Amino acid sequence: MSSDAGSFGVLGLLIVVVAYFVPTFVAFGRGVPNKGSVLVVNLFLGWSVVGWVVALAMAARSR
Image 1 (cartoon, helix red, strand yellow):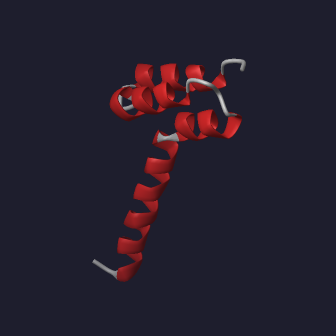
Image 2: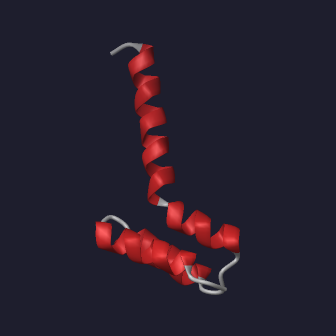
Image 3: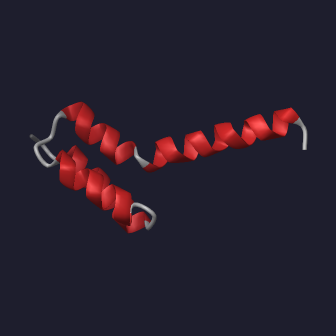
């Protein structure tokens, strides 16, 4: 395996992790009152598409 392939793997993993936690970043960025709940739902249920969407909906709710 070349060095470029290893770098791409690390970059790819970083992109996936950031995409996984988008609802959490949105919640903390908007300062929603239930940001802890968004983090927990995202962390434990975000692997399912439904859990990720629920966490994003919680983060996008009006303040």
